[in-house]
Amino acid sequence: MAEAIYESVISTGAECVIFDAREFPGIDDICALALGSSTRMKRTLPMVKRLLSELPALNGLPAAAFGSYGWSGEAPDEIADRLKDLGASLIEGKPIKAKDYPSDSILDECRALGTKLASRCQ
Ligand SMILES: Cc1cc2nc3c(=O)[nH]c(=O)nc-3n(C[C@H](O)[C@H](O)[C@H](O)COP(=O)(O)O)c2cc1C
Image (cartoon, rainbow, N blue to C red; front, side, top):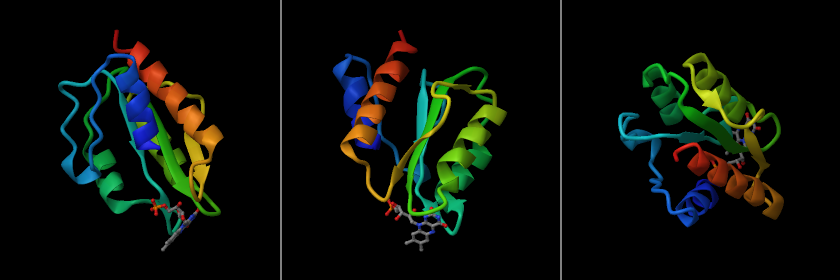
């Protein structure tokens, strides 16, 4: 899902970096943010959860949440809620959720998200 978002952003000519939650580069040099996690034990992955807890106020930063799940799917919603609480401007009404693996239509949604994220950086 991250790769589909990335490729779509890059195709617009904008810059994009895929990062691991343990190596978050910070928000100083970014104009938009997409954060994802699969759901484990009804929760967001611990490293993503830690990142969410360490994020500063996002002051209207365009942002989106995504992730995969098997049956309950809390993680993408949890990410979206936290981004919203931090003051991000959520691009999608709902996070993009893939059941088990992203289908072609979910990947299309990810690509559309990438285009929207890039457009918010112009
Ligand atoms: C140990 C474990 C716990 C899981 N717990 C949940 C859960 O509570 N709710 C849910 O919707 N999916 C759960 N899943 C399913 C995963 O979210 C789903 O398989 C997801 O696609 C895994 O993506 P990943 O391999 O990239 O982490 C769990 C999977 C594993 C292996």
